[in-house]
Length: 148
Image (cartoon, rainbow, N blue to C red):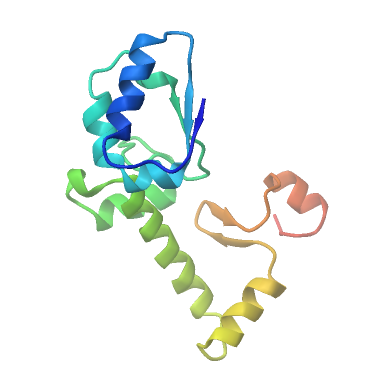
């Protein structure tokens, strides 16, 4: 089941549906999981069906204490309160990191320069995150999009 456009209370309905239907998986947009993370956490806390709630993201896990991700290490250093480490706060953190990287490379900060930067640079990397192309790193290297 693919669910789009969640409203208040839908996380509990999804949790109940998964509990009652053991052969079902529910795919939810990561943006909606991010925005309604507290609802999903409350609805699925202790649930044996939580593993059948599926979402896709290229972000590393926001709460992984043993992460190998430099991005998450920096996120944890910046966000010391564990309860504030959510998908949405990680998304905001990486967006700001990306903007800081890009702005430092611009001759002037304005809409035209920012637009031109993204237009001319297919892939932008920041620590262990790559933004832009939806190809894996080795394919990007083979096509000359990024350096090794």
